[in-house]
Length: 595
Image (cartoon, rainbow, N blue to C red; front, side, top):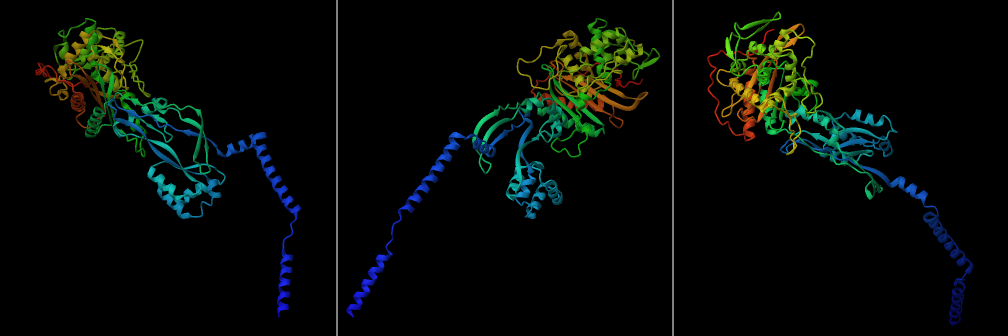
């Protein structure tokens, strides 16, 4: 038994000796050499890439990571003289798709996402999908422009492959239709296409900045490398408008045109000492924030584009010209009997025989015969030059696209009848802006300043041109106060506490072969007459019904707006209250002319 145990132990010892590993040195050396060769190859390749030939890989890397990023600048604001915003850009998003990426990312696998996208964009799902599937190789299409941030956030959560968002801006107009035609609007690419937006597009736009950046795999910017093109900051545009006065003017004008069922209306207010335009309103208007259904006629700034025969509104110029040349004085007496006058085969008439009256009374009573007799004492070229000095037939200096200079005819030969009708506003056309500027010149002691829609800085007010003697301008203004006093033709233009100087106009509209049955009613004037601050022209085109005179249609609008404007601007009341008037015994004819 003992021998067996010894033999077994001996056999186990021999087995263990046979299992002991035998080293092979050549294998170790082979592995070591292989590792060294691989490491050397890596080092050599790295050295080759980084030292000998790095440009190619850099080029390949740049193709994948370098991008040119354009940083758009928002369009400048348009504000009134007090800083109230009239046009401002708000951030929005554009929804776009890359059809190639949509197909590569299996973007149509979940139709529910496309249904949700179509619903939020207010599109038909079939049409939306068809647009993306139309050209699978296409790389970019717009799905919807100018969506709100809330809509953009919803779309981003849909996570549709190949559908993305792009920041852009949208123009918003807080004043809406009150300044629609004047401010204008921009197109979907934020480029001005109407009004001041178009006139000052370069000033408002600026230029985007272009930067070379390096982006990561997720599209995020990891490094700003260089500025490729310097950007130019946009400029804000500060207008001469006072939005308080503008709103008041638009409401009153809209109410009057609706009440009288007129085709259109225009109103312009000018600050006499500076020539700045404080209000320019038109009806009908449009809301630039809601453009669907807007017609072209609603977008026209009629205050500068539409020209009308002004009628009796220009009669003060004839009196001023006669006074300037010493042909008459305010007390000179002219015989208008028997109430009509035949001139070169034509007929000039008043509403009633006014008999013998002084020049002041004839102007207040709007006598066509009195004006015609004064005009016939002057050379027609002198009258036309005088009209031109007051801005008729010329541009106002406002510098807006579409401004009409009106029409003051230039002929080699004039009949006496044509010269006579020229004296009471027929045979020529003027815009509402020109009429307001005419009375601003009278109120400014005969100094003609260019009209400005931009706010002037202190010291920038132009000196202007002296077109008539200051004392003559003051004489005419004093005479015109009688128009709004008792016995005048426009008592509805009077304002409590302020003296008002102005003139009515009611002219027939020209048609083929003569004059039709439609009228243009006007009132232009200034206040306070003793220290003129504001000049205004109101034009109501084609009022319907029996009330179509300037004194009953346009004058009340003047009174309402002028009274509010004077209070808003804290203009002191007149030193003297409006006089009772001394002309009540004379019949107050309206100034409609039948030719």
